[in-house]
Length: 386
Image 1 (cartoon, rainbow, N blue to C red):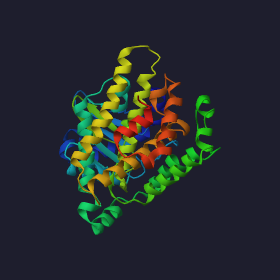
Image 2 (cartoon, helix red, strand yellow):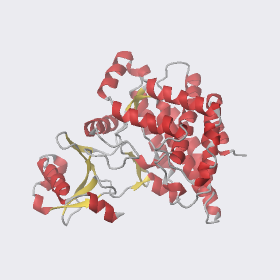
Image 3 (tube, rainbow, N blue to C red):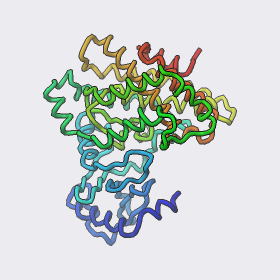
Image 4 (cartoon, rainbow, N blue to C red):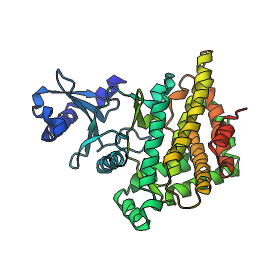
């Protein structure tokens, strides 16, 4: 993997990245970057992400080159300025909620952010059996505050229209709509890629009009509901954790949309973690115990969210019930698209049997979404808990 990353990052690209970082050495966070001869560059995990650091010191930043798509399976980060603006907005609303942006260079489409080198990707941490309740609850609070303070019920119709203009993300939204709600539910779509086991169960999707109707309902809500500024792709790979802290990253899919989308995607990815450990080939009671800890954190996440997300457009109880209903539908779509579409998750690399159980969870959530009004019911239906 490191070899392919190095291959994609030509010396010309590396030189260009270093020059742009040096150009911004007047910023307080980059005063160490004035002399390009003292800088070194490393691959940062994919071929458009780099770590630029001062040789022989701990000073470093992460640089994302947004000019070219790096993975045709997912929307690429083609709007560096929007991601920069979103990270600033998130940190302003909920200080410490997101990675801090350093600069955005419009000409080169380069985004520079702080280097969270001591943090781990949340997905990796969960797969490895590490979960800190405080970090998970901080994430729930941060998301709730961002939603609350940009919610149409708090800022008004005129302000939400202005926010919608500021965070226009039409190209990415079109791609996301295709990936989440259209391609996985279209038989024979050429972008779909799934295991033989999942392929043998595709009649659960294509042979069930209830599932297809529910997916169409969720697509309409995704495209039409202008409720608050949301992250738009809040899965466990878009979060970094360290001890009791969590930070949101990868904000290039943000837009003014339904609050339930962020929660639905997050819960879907917790469900992946649950099955990853429950059906782990290593027959170890610790995995089963951890799986049930994940169920508990889902319940706590939604409870914590509602403690802080108090901007509602109707009776609080009715609003919360509707949000959880939508959340169930979005979770179902996310589960299905990760199993049927091209953007798979690492949780099932060594537990392929779990894919069928997860697919069943996604189907059940979609079929029942409009009857699900509590997180307890959502988890009960998704996981068939006793």
